[in-house]
Length: 190
Image (cartoon, rainbow, N blue to C red; front, side):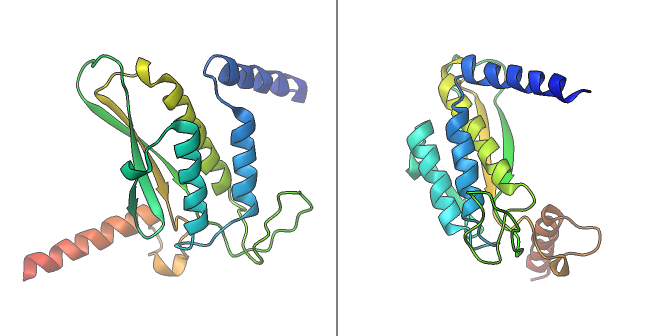
């Protein structure tokens, strides 16, 4: 595909998001750059968490009292529809990873990491910004989403766990499941 064709498709998609779904692409891009500029390592994402929650509360109307924290710096929030109930109750979750890597960023971008030796080099800043865009879209259209449908936003800390903590075949999700099962087995033995 030619670059001109790809750019035309991108502009059409951006127009659809900004016009039809009222997505403020500028604020999402600004937030991604801010997250990129101030990266934090796993389980140290406290300022990142504050930035994300501030965006959700000011831009999406999320009551901060309804945000549930977990795993030190992670959090979830359930966005519920406000339209007439339809079918059975359902919840679908979307996850974004929050942590950066212990890498020196070699860049001249104005939003280059200011935290020495820490950088978002695997897209987590983009993942978080994308999830904020989804939250903004849901907030703008919650009256058209049935009241028995829920979208769970999950902001996960420490996704880029050091491989020394994992067995060769495990992802961080596998690790969590394995640890929970081991804990459950220990309780049964007692």
